[in-house]
Image (tube, helix red, strand yellow):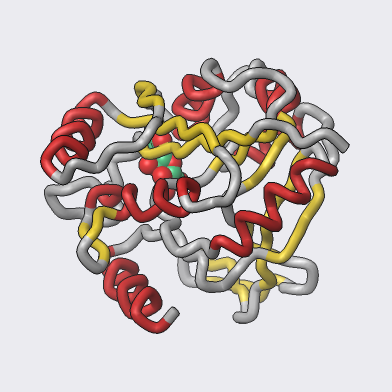
Length: 225
Ligand code: C5P
């Protein structure tokens, strides 16, 4: 089987309002390096070439460029302007990905994914049109509405991670659909387009930095890994 050229889209265009603070969460320091740098370095460390496309807001663009200049952090990447939602940010980035490629989409704020998992996902992405890492839910799950609540049967429930890896021509076609707020990730866009998803185990340590305490937790994990 011929290997598809590999790309990664890193949506980093969010404001990170749930994290709070002056600095966007993608640029928060994590054990001496900004989160976004840690994320891109993982893809740059793979033993094959991966084209990197990062979607940023106009203010993040300046912060990132200043950071790269100041720290002399030089690597080939394309910066695109992020959109109103993650969907729009990914859509803008897809303009820079050719058909016939394998494209991963990975949240900027998941800097703890392992290189082994990236290799395995890109490998599966050569065989399946849409590869999605998931982890089982270990906790009891409850839906709360006002003062009442019900237990949700957790059998078959999973949480969905990134990177998700797609055949680029399929992802690009799926992203031509009109935006729907139900599109919380790329798998949901591709599934609506009618493409079956291939699920594979994710990693419990591949956390998405969302709340202030996640930075502290991630730095402990990094030191322990
Ligand atoms: O908001 P949420 O936590 O789901 O964001 C997931 C990823 O999508 C983050 O890396 C964030 O920077 C990115 N994002 C984006 N453009 C937006 C909103 C979020 O690239 N307009």
